[in-house]
Image (cartoon, rainbow, N blue to C red; front, side, top):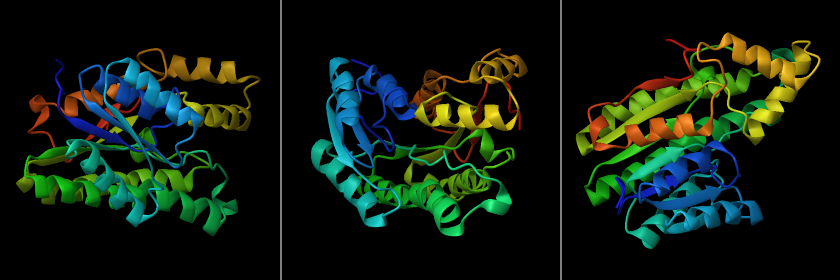
Length: 266
C-alpha cells in the first residue's frame, strides 16, 4: 500500500523513455497509483514506458492524445474515467521545446503557433477537461503544470517557448482561483534544465550558440553555475509532484514552484 493507492494519475507527454513524464509516473507507480501514459502516439517507446510501470506493480493504461486538439483532451479524460473511475491527479507535461531560432527569424505558423498551441492551449484544454471530471466526481483533485525555469526568466532563441511557459503560470493562477472551491488545487513546477530527449537537443543547440567546443563542456559550465552543482533530474520534478499531489499540500495552490537547485530564486 502506497500513499496514492487507489488514486489515478494522468501525465501528458509521458510516452518517452527517460523523459520527465516517465519519471513522474514512476514515482507515483511506486506509491501505488494507477498510471495513464499519454503521448501524441502510443508507439513502441510508449508501450515500453507502460511495461516498465507494470513492472513496478502499477495498473497502467495508454491513450494517444494531441493536446493541441480540445476534443482529444476531452477524450483522454473520458477514456481515463472509463478505465479507472476518475482522475485524481492530472499533470500537464506535454510540450515543445526543441524549436530554437532567433526572434527575428521565427516563423509565425511553424515556431510560434505550434509551440503556443501545445504548451499553453494544450494545458488549458486538458485543465478544463480534467477539472470538469473532478468537479462532477466531487472528490477534489490536483492539477500540476510542468512549466520551466523559462516561466521565470527570458532565454535567447526561445521566444515562443518562454512566452508559453510564462503563460502557463498565468493559467495556473487563474485556474487555482476558480477551482479551489471544488477542493482542486492547481500548481506549476518550474524545473531548470533537465537532459531528457528534448533537453539533449537544447544542449546541442546552445553549446554551439555559446561557443563551447563540446556539449560536455557546456554541461560542465552549467553545473558550475548551479548552487547544487548539477542540472536537474526527472526525479527532482517527480518528487515535487508527489508533494503537491499529497494531502500535506492541500493548502498550497496557485504557486509556481522552482525546482532548480537554487538556479532560479524568484
